[in-house]
Amino acid sequence: MFSSTWNFIKRHKRKFIFAGAVVGGVYFLGKYAQKKIREIQEKEANEYIAQARRQFHFESNQRTCNMTVLSMLPPLREAIILQLNSETLTSLLKTKPANKLEIWEDLKIISFTRTIVAVYSTCMLVVLLRVQLNIIGGYLYLDNSIGRNTTSPLAPPDVQQQYLSSIQHLLGDGLIELMTVVKRAVHNALGGVSLKQSLSLLELEQQLSWIRAEVESGSERPLSWYMLADGENALSDQACGLSPDDVMTIRLLNETRDMLDSPDFTTVLNTCMNRGFSRLLDNLAEFFRPPPGDSTPSSASDSLSAVSLPLAKIIPIMNGQINSICSDTPCHLVQDLLMNEQVKDFSANVYESFSSPQDLQK
Image 1 (tube, rainbow, N blue to C red):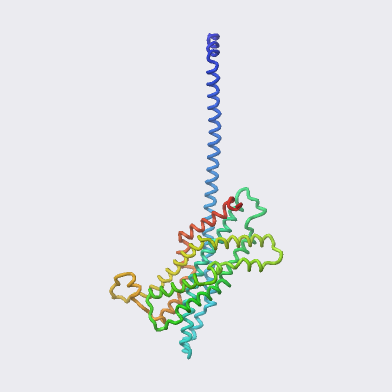
Image 2: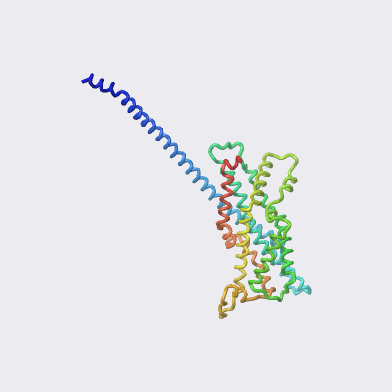
């Protein structure tokens, strides 16, 4: 029995060796496959956790952006009113001065200027803070990532404070320069229009379009200049010896300028400005409604031309719009801008660029 079995094994030795190799190979392949599957599963789980963590951090950062925008609106409104103080002129008119017509002409220019500046600066504030806080947010995410060297953070607190303080340019020199440019455009468009001349909402929209064209296309400076000071000026203000924090801040500012000069930023800012002036016209439309009982115009164009108001009556309406445009809460315009899909997508792209280690190395 034993010998016959042994003889059988000897006769089929190669088959047994081959079968053993196959079985052994299958076993080891199975073990290897199990190991690889576990590694893939662990990698996918880690990537999912990292992605969820980054998504949570991004969403938290957007809420910070929104709150920061709302907190900056009151000082922006105060800065505009301080520089374009129409209240003084309205108080003078109540005293029935001899130069009443001259004061009305000044009030016309100032009321239109400050409302238009309010639209521009509010849009700029929203988009600029989206860029700055998402750059900082991306670096903070990397600083808090596992394996990062915490002794050399990409965005130390002092650098963050110094970098974010650059927003003061928009509330200071940039805002004053913007007012100058807008005031000149308003004067060119409305300076020769009589206070007694009646304007429809459609004609008022045309006036705003002319003013926008001169501000956005006829200015010597790009719109980005009003948001962030020139790099050369920023460097010249530094002391001879730059600290590491100064170098980091300058790097952040240069990265921000690159963003402000990008086509994507220009597209998003234009979208916001279009929305801002559209919202302004919606607000003004409330004062151009036909009297009750009038027949409904046959078309939208007719409805925009159906009611006309003397410019003298439009001036106080326009003058008060700053309280609606630059209101911290509730403000329909700011809500429109913060919830705009293009603004959200642009914010996500900025955050993605600065929260990816491979992009940072580039």
